Image 1: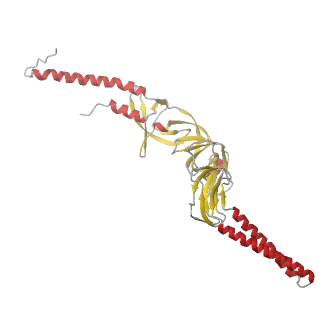
Image 2: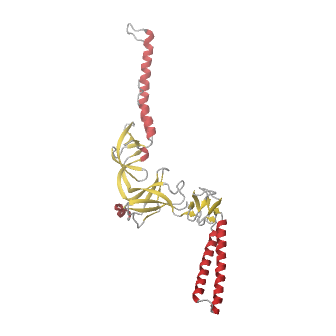
Image 3: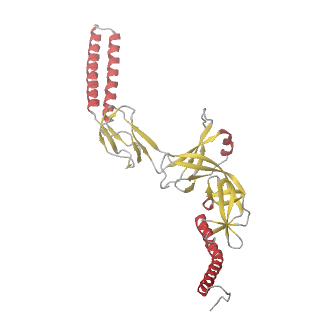
Length: 350
């Protein structure tokens, strides 16, 4: 048993003080040993300069290759609605039905006028043979017959447009007219798109067009979905906007991409070439406002937070490092676990 021989020191306080001191030393020793083991357990990546794709990023919009806005061709009230947004339809399916009574009455009136005009024409021919009317009167009667026939045919076609059918197979994107509303010729009723064929369209400044004419590859990023895919083809449209001086570039997407719908935001990275650069994964970067940093594993196994100066995004999910790191250093891939490990290694505040 350890005893304190100093005079004037109460024996009841001597031993607990030694125990407290030994416990503190033991805790400090075990903490300094546990830090390297904990840091080595974290996944890291060796930072080295390697060839990456040089890209030109541009904001883009997802579009359907085959899409249609179905509009009314006659006037009337919508009496049947068979589909809703998000529903799959096939070409020729009944989508809506418009009240045909007004169109039917118009068709019947046009048919009656045609019958009357044809009868007048027959009488004009008979009177012409008897010499009672001129040839001009016969010609006028013939023109009236032709006009009445065209009007009757147009009215009968309108009756057939009371049933609104799907022009393509696909998905109903939006229903623009509800049950009971009035439909007029040209009024949009709903939109349909084919999800099997999608593309993205980006606006490119004219001074960049010379580079894109030699580009055949592009990578499309969906930031909200956290996914990136390779485009099938790059097509530069031969037109330019007179007001903004930009041209449209289309990138075809492969079929079967989940959660991607027309109207979604995307970012296209047009691949212009390759170069050797020092990069780190974007997932390893800690951002606090305009400041970017990574957790670096040192040679002795301890961790440190290193501020970086970053460049543009290159490759797949990587960002260029302009300053702050050297080739051969190791960066922790999970910054959250690195922060916890670094904080646990620090002695508790008193």
